[in-house]
Length: 465
Image (cartoon, one colour):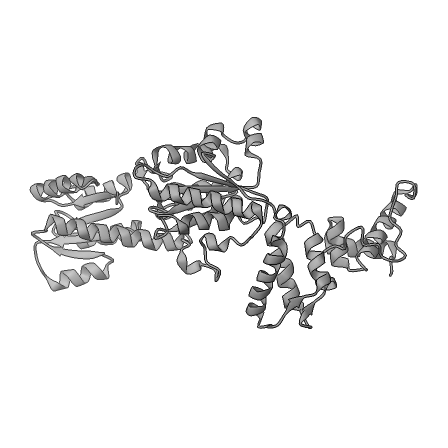
C-alpha cells in the first residue's frame, strides 16, 4: 500500500530514523520539527496520515491535533509521546486521534499502525463513493452464470468472456489490459463487466462503477481522480477518487464515449502509467486497477470526427467484447421472458402466472429496440397489473404489429393521403390508434411521441373510437 506520511517530531534523531525506515518500506515522507511547520506542510504536501509528537516546542501536540482536524476532518493522525499519561491518551482520542503510541516507538509497530489508519480512512471514503461490492449482488449472481441465453450468439459471448478470465488468471506480471464492452442500450453491458470482475482473480477486490453520462462534465474528473481540500470552490476537504477506491479491484466506466478530451488524456495516463493525481495535488499515486469500459456509441467514427482520442481508443480496445442485440439471439426471448416472469412474480407475491400462446407469439415477433432491458420492463409491468393467472397478448405493453390485419382497418398509402397537412396528421393518428385498438400508451409508443402529446392531439382533432 502506497501513501504519504507527515512526521511532526522535534527530536531530530527519532524523526530521521522514522523517515528512513518508512521510506525503505516504500512510503513517501516529510518531517517537521514543530507544530507550526507541521501545519504548513499539511497544506503544502497533503499527507495521507500524520505521526504527531505530543511534546512539541511552541504549540503542544493536542493543540496541533485540534487544528489539523479542523482543516482535514478525515485525515488519520497517530499521536506519540514519551510520557505514558492515561489522560493524554484520553484527550488525544477525544480530539480525533486514530491511535496513541508510547515512546520509544517500535518502527515496525509504527508502520503497522499507519497501515491500519490509512486503510480505515480509505474504506470510509470508498463507502462515500458508492463502492459497490458483493453486498449489492442481485439474486441471480454476478458471474458468468448471470448471463442467461442458449442462442449461438450468447454461447459465443460467454466463450469469449471465459477466454478473458482465463488469461487474467494466468497473468504473472504487469497489469491486465483494459476491456471495451460495446453494445446497444439494454443489452447488458454492466452485467458483462460484473461477470468479468466476479469470475476473475480480482473478485475479492472492489467493483467500482461510474456512469460517465450521468454526471456533469466538470464533476467527472473530480469523481474519477479525487481532489485535495481547496482544489476548487466547494472542495472543503480531501476526497479520494473512484480510481483510488477501486485499488486492488475493477473500475467500470459506463458510457466512456461521453468523456471530454481533457479527461480522456488523464484516463490514458492511468492506463499507461497506473498512476493518478488528485485535483490540486502535485503528487502521483500508484494504483492497481483493472479498467473495464462500455459504450453504445461508435468510437471509431468519433475518433475520425476528433471527439475521441485515437490513442485511448486503441488502449481501451486491446480486448473488445461485442454484445449481440436481443433480436439476434434466436430463442432467447422466450427463455428470458419466462425467467423475468418468475422473478417479478416472486417480488410482487403473485404465484402461478404464465403467458398464453398468443402472448408468447407476440413476444417472439417484437423487434425489441430496447433489448433485454425493454423485455424485463414489459414483463414486470404485466406482473404488476396482472389480475388473472394467464397473461394474454393484449396485456403486453407492446405496439400491435402492422401486419396484424384487424377487421375494417385501411392502411395508409401514398395515394390515399389527403392534400392538407392537418388532415394527413389526423389520418395518421387515427390509423395508429386503430392499429393499437385505441390503447393510447401503445399508439404513442408506435408514433414515437409521449402519451400527453397524443392525448392533446386526440382532443385537438376530436378523435373518438
